[in-house]
Length: 330
Image (cartoon, rainbow, N blue to C red):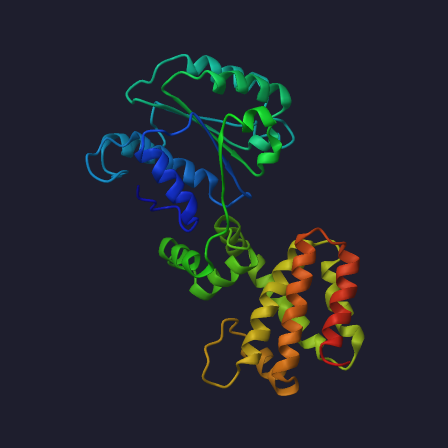
């Protein structure tokens, strides 16, 4: 099985290859992962392999079946989800009833009829119970691929009758190359930084590159770096004010700040910079030892971990200011 549009997650790929090649693909597959992580992309890669009629390695991406999947017009692939015009609306039992009725009809031209169910974390209990009856005794040809941000949204009875795979962020370097190959106007270093900020989530990385969020993180990181070495302690507190109600920006800016500290540690005029913030790096390396810079980078890592664990913003800001000054023996 060739995964051309889905990268990293090697163990997941190996598991899927075994299921598809053995002809034992489950009737219900749950794909778990954050928004933007690639759940829909993987679902389509699976559909391609199952629908492909090539005698060679599948999917060939050239046969009539593959072409229909790629164009989104295959008659035996059905997509369902909540009403996207109303973000708070759940994935209802009425939608599942429509799926049940449709599943009673045999495939038009393939041996399978594949159902993509999106945003299943919004599927209410009634809908899940109705779905359970279907996946307990499904038509032989029907396959259900359920995409959700967390498997904990499902009832245990649904989970017990499904195979669950969990997606992780991509390797930053591999992801950056993939982004640049498919978006020639994006700089590799920008893609790399955006992926590090977004923890390997390609969807979110592309979003940050397109809406200017990455530049915002870069600007704040530079301000933090310079204010952290200012003689006036209030400068650092003032700069951190932007994080008061925005944990995402806190994580993004500190992730980039770590790149700046790294460059300052190895600053010798020969090493390649990953932050490309030459002036800030020069100032830091001129006033701080490598040991202090490494301690400040460690501070960023600790605060990021706390923020990702839903730490209180006000406490995180106070801790960040105190720890960055303390790392300099101030």
